[in-house]
Figure 1 (cartoon, rainbow, N blue to C red):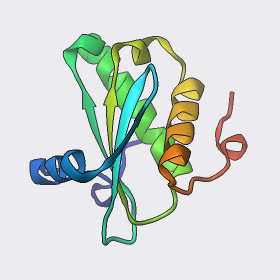
Figure 2: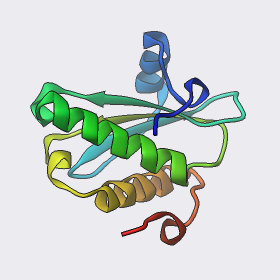
Figure 3: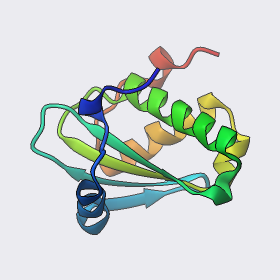
Length: 120
């Protein structure tokens, strides 16, 4: 499931704006940088370097993070840039989803309950 264009950060100028002025939190698997926007929807941008793994691995991580974001982030008005670290390649979808949930909460972004979203 890919996100619609209205929920993705697509332009380099938007990435630079978020990275320059956003609040940062991190854990062992990812960094999240967030700033508010003047939109009714939150948007996400992903940065997954070649250090994380092969193209297949990077695309898998990208799909998992996008799905987690689509399922738990229904509040509006935020731009998030997620920077995946190499340890993110060895974890399950549920763990990535829990990471997005906890990091979003640390940033003060309202997310839906994790129990409603994760299906084992």
